[in-house]
Length: 278
Image (cartoon, rainbow, N blue to C red; front, top):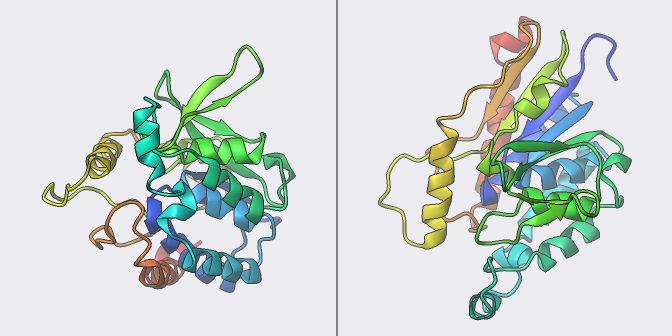
């Protein structure tokens, strides 16, 4: 860890647009910027925890291979299972079994606190709608909760017996979990915000109930108060093109393009005067 500053990575949610974070991580680590801490939510928490096990360029390339093989069923399981869940009056279309298997296959640790680099994972408390930040916990539970898009995937109960609470996707409360980083950052730190959020521009692309749900969540993001950082903390945005249309939230047909765009966005951030001036 640097004696002058720490590098904190904040990874947003964004569904299939999370592929852009692979390119961002590739460029940052290639430039020698290694995370000392990470804060992440939803798909960003999957990327963050994967990298935190071994924060090296080689691990980023392994993550790129994981993304290249990703399909919608990788996260949700067979599409036909949705009909069975509807018939059984379950409060979700897909179980999180497939996502749990993915987490267990990709991560060498079973506990969040056992990763080589500390990761703070964001979720949303379903009863309060407020963000919750986890520094410890069972990785499959915490990551499945962070990515549990309401209606699609089931809420996850987290907490001690008798006091566990239902948690859902981090993006319901805060798609870019900056509040989870604000109380960690200290003077001199650099906070790299790897933001792959797509903000709504128009409604004509709403074709399914999922599209409506995602648009509603994205619209709410625009009305959230900004997190307050110490003035001596440098917040460095690395943003994916908000206008690029990569289809529905589980459309993985644009992965290679998104990785390339993410790498370009990080390269631009690294070359920005705000960084070189520091």
